[in-house]
Image 1 (cartoon, helix red, strand yellow):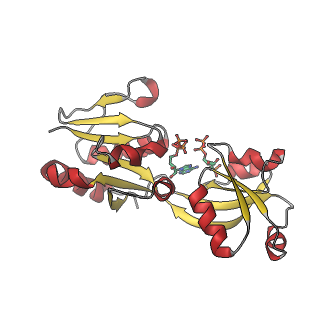
Image 2 (cartoon, rainbow, N blue to C red):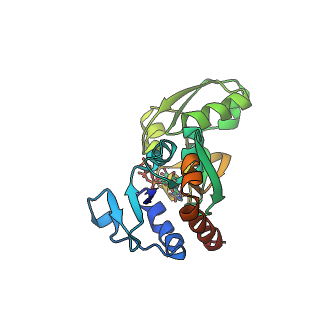
Image 3 (cartoon, rainbow, N blue to C red):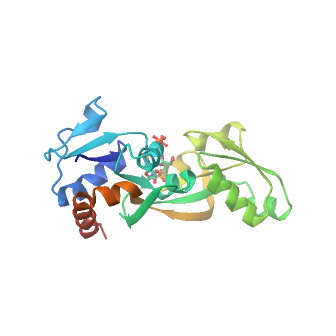
Length: 213
Ligand SMILES: Nc1ncnc2c1ncn2[C@@H]1O[C@H](COP(=O)(O)OP(=O)(O)OP(=O)(O)O)[C@@H](O)[C@H]1O
Ligand SMILES: O=P(O)(O)OC[C@H]1O[C@H](OP(=O)(O)OP(=O)(O)O)[C@H](O)[C@@H]1O
């Protein structure tokens, strides 16, 4: 029985390589330098499928992949249906923040009941946050480069991921609220966990033992 693991290119793949190694799995090639979407490994019974970060939960939900690694941001937006989430891998760590242009008095706007235009790739997380605060917002869904939106008048604020703060700084934005701490989690298709338990459990154990501090 083949074990299929869904991963995204970039930081998740890079930070997953040591975890795979702990489970005795070595990718046959690097996705960055290959156009292949199915990548073999040193183990004939394990293959990797390379998908968009936000598509990882969907592949695992429907059983097209048995395991996957996805950010908490992506998992909240997906909803987590059909997924078992046994392990926080403590990789791809960042924070979900509200940010506004430097000089914009966000607290004052909120206090005065202003209606804010908020650009984000994370409409569920943003909607819930502002609903809890009782702030009226118009959510504008974007797929990337959120930091641009306030600079060109598309939005008053953004909800986005911040790590070093370099992107905010380069675009003269400042973080005004911290919504969530984000890291990536191992996700498992619930049916696959039962059917492929003897193959999956050792991988889960190896990952658990290799989680970075
Ligand atoms: N600057 C960052 N530092 C650390 N982790 C991050 C950072 N940005 C995003 N992440 C985390 O890594 C995950 C994957 O991000 P990545 O940039 O590889 O994909 P993406 O471009 O956001 O996804 P998609 O391809 O679906 O647009 C995110 O879901 C998030 O959990
Ligand atoms: O605080 P920093 O260290 O600057 O990181 C924050 C940036 O990282 C993420 O983008 P990413 O690098 O994933 O680019 P992408 O959205 O174009 O994939 C996020 O959307 C921010 O733009």
